[in-house]
Image (cartoon, rainbow, N blue to C red; front, side):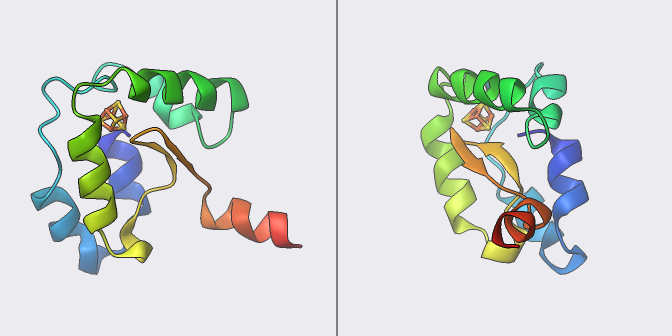
Length: 96
Ligand code: SF4
């Protein structure tokens, strides 16, 4: 989960809630792994690498709680708390 990816995928109306409720990222496994997490929605190897980082992350429980507290429309795509969340575009492509 990178801040850049999250902020780019959220509707403005939910942005304050998303930012205000984010878990403490100081110890997050993804903190210095932006390139892996940013590539994850488009690159299967990066996606698996990101999941492996999440599995070892000390803030995974808080991250999962934060993710589930978000309105479904505000939830970022990619890898979050070890979940692989397809983007709206990817879900639409899979359905066509
Ligand atoms: S669980 Fe994954 S996405 Fe969440 S803070 Fe940890 S490394 Fe980042």
